[in-house]
Image (tube, rainbow, N blue to C red; front, top):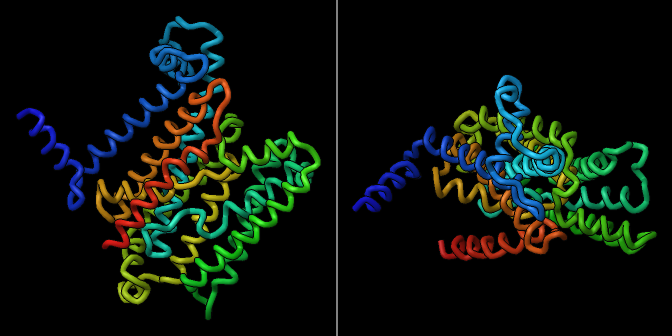
Length: 359
């Protein structure tokens, strides 16, 4: 009886027609915070959750002075220098990929669309491998990898956008086809670069980066992705009615007063900016942008005002725990994060595809 009452209560909260967003967001925020604390403590050398929480709280102004120091200096170094920036980066990367997926699916009016559908990841990989293997962008300093990946993503999206414009408007079919074509071209360029690699170590590092990883996370890597993510989410939240209208078709959206051409340009810009910055710090991590928006719609319906924050939190939580698995399955070595998301995301995509076909 008690279980039945709880089940009805959950169904009332996660009601797709009228979800209780305040409770849902509070629950998901708590899950995200708990995930961060637990994930920071997990690894080849574990740190107890209470110690992790105390170390983190001790660094917060106004609170830290009231936290008694009951931990070893080694624990503090593991938490603050190694794992916390990595976990926080995972949360930001996951949220960014999920939001990119929401934007892309609204743009092409297809829930099976992926953030990398425009070839952004392939362009970023081509430029990044060129920098890693041949030092082409070494003049950019310690952030040469991130900047080169972003430049590659930007160049690709500009090229795809130029090809897809028909009479001043984006042709969705041409956008998708040109994205696939440019992606294949960039993949070919990447293969040529890797086959010409001057040394085996550089090739290994390039391949590992392209498979997606948070291993190189530093505090300095968090600022730009966080700012870009918050800015893009804010813009999308402000325009959530336009996103809802786009799903009805260009003509219907236009009749509702939406400037379709401007909105399409905005979505292309946001998707490329988010994907470019994310790939720059984490490499290519697939399927997060496909899965999280779909799961969010199952929980709260199709209204983008509700889908965006839920998808962002889901993406962050999913990447954080996938990264934990990536560094623990074959510890002390670690698997590329993108491999695990592909292993889990591939079957999910097939299920979606079959369900979509039956529908």
